[in-house]
Amino acid sequence: MSMKQTPMSPNKHTSNGSASVLPLENAFSDSLAMLNSEKAVEELIQQPILHGIDDHLIEFAEALRTVAKALRQAAEGKASAQAEASEWKRKYELERTHNLQLENKAMPSEKHLDENGRVVHLTNKPLLSDGAVKKSDRCCGEHGICSHQVLRDGEHDHDASVVPNKMTRKASFKLSWCCKGEKSDQKKHDIVSFEKGNITTAERSSKQISLKWESPPQTVLILTKPNSTAVRILCSELVRWLKEQKSLNIVVEPRVRTELLTESSYYQFVQTWENDKEIMSLHSKVDLVVTLGGDGTVLWAASMFKGPVPPVVPFSLGSLGFMTPFYSERYKEYLDSILRGPISITLRHRLQCHVIRDSAKSDLDSEEPILVLNEVTIDRGISSFLTNLECYCDNSFVTCVQGDGLILSTTSGSTAYSLAAGGSMVHPQVPGILFTPICPHSLSFRPLILPEYVTIRVQVPFNSRGHAWASFDGKDRKKLAPGDALVCSMATWPVPTACQADSTSDFLRSIHEGLHWNLRKTQSFDGPRET
Image 1 (cartoon, rainbow, N blue to C red):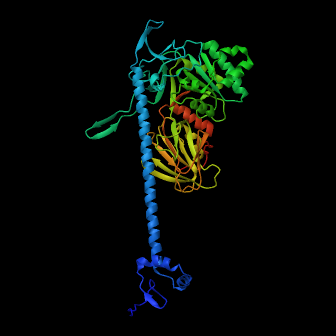
Image 2: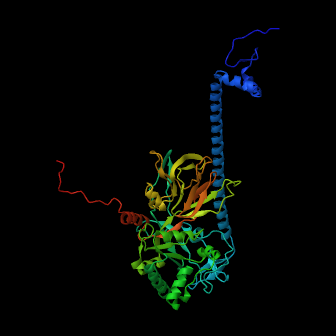
């Protein structure tokens, strides 16, 4: 019996004198069958190159590209979902804080007559550990920002005390918007009107935030730069003056108290804390914070307060001071004016950052949040590879950073690392987040300034060649492995720092004196002139 011969094609072959037709779809399975014998292998090697293989390779490559695209879309979807969950968490925390404040307002209060015969409402929330003294909880005014709105985190279980033997009440104050030369302390807003289909914004009349004491400050926390003889001498003079001339309670760090007692037993009245729990309750006892040092001392003071921060008076005893407008030589004059009030302040916003590991089940399963006053930096560390970072703003993909790293900075930190990396200098009262790359491997990667209400997510992709490292105000360094993410948003509690003149004057003076901004010799006027 004979079979009809068909012309040979690249997909057909003959074995042992008999011809067989191999369909294209069975080519791979028949080839595997032939590999069972050495003769089949030899014949397979001697065959001409099959042209159909090229088509299969092209189809396979296209399939791989499709799969890679699908995987990327899935990763972006996951990141967007995590960013959205983080935003909901932030909103929940804000709402919870607001509800706690409302509950505190509704707490029963008792009436007490002060020395002038006026009625003062005192809540049942204890200020000191013995519970004998009550804290003022009344509203300071309908048009101002009250101290209980600025200096409260809803905590009721602080039983530690740094003032064991003193029966003092924390001073209350009110923040208000005011103009230069105006006596009114009413809070003023931008006025937006909708008239005949047109949207107009009235000129803002409020230019500066003012703090007015409603009761005199009683307790001052003094923080100093370590290992400085000049600072140690000034600190001892300042403590003595505040005690003898102003009759204030003085709280210092344990290190400083030891130095003062080594100098003289006169400083036995100086108080300190013993553990972290007492540090967490400092905001409920301290009326004013005085820093002696540079910007680093201000950063250290801010890091001690995880929630509300008392007003900070920063004295300049460092090399560069963008946040320290007060000269130490005139500390008596400055502090006397500040303790009387009112004073101009700058509300310096902070970033709240938390790391979400790849192993986390959700964005709620994150590490303890970290607050930064200057910036959070994500860099490549000691790795020789470029940093690969995927960045998202709320639910929108921003870019993929390839370079030495990325800086997320507050406007107060715009004159720090961000400035050195090419970022803009921004007035500290401007609400925003600076997005500044570090040595990007791109000529078109320019810094951004994003609004303060966004949530930024920086994620190390799984295909990254190395790890990334995050540092928070230059410390607390954390490693970010592939799959880990860092989520940043504006924190609820700002850092109020006192101004020597006002926010704008202090800011311009700092960049003129600290950076010699735009300093050059004036062009000679005796040259050629236009005719």
